[in-house]
Amino acid sequence: MAYDFQVTVDSAEPHTQADWWAETLGWTVEPSDEAFIREMIAKGYAMESDTALHRGVLVWREGAAISHPETSRRVLFQLVPEGKTVKNRLHFDVRVGGPENMEKEFAKLQARGATFLHRGSQGPNRWITLADPEGNEFCIG
Image 1 (cartoon, rainbow, N blue to C red):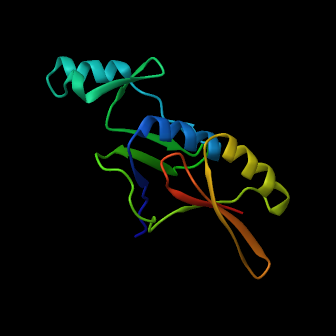
Image 2 (image 1 turned 45 degrees about the horizontal axis):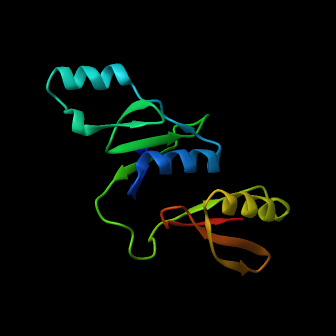
């Protein structure tokens, strides 16, 4: 039997990271259900301190998710107390439509807060390794 899964990324600011990655991938930030959050607080299952306001919307403080607009692919950004300290053991390879789009996307990502790390190649394949605003490495190619 095959299983479905989501990728979970530790984050200092999960909602900001979700916004950044949704824009980067052309995915959608999953909407907050403010009525459900208020109901959970009213019933004593959650506290106000479990929530935050993000862009004027009541959200769960602990995390935010993005999803692919046409599939069940999902990435969850979850709040952790510690910052990133070492190289990722897992990273995203973002396919930007070939070498003709790579430099344009590279410039757009840098303008949005990505940090250039290095360029790589293997045979005819080329890629650029960057870090997102929280320092998580990813490649475009």
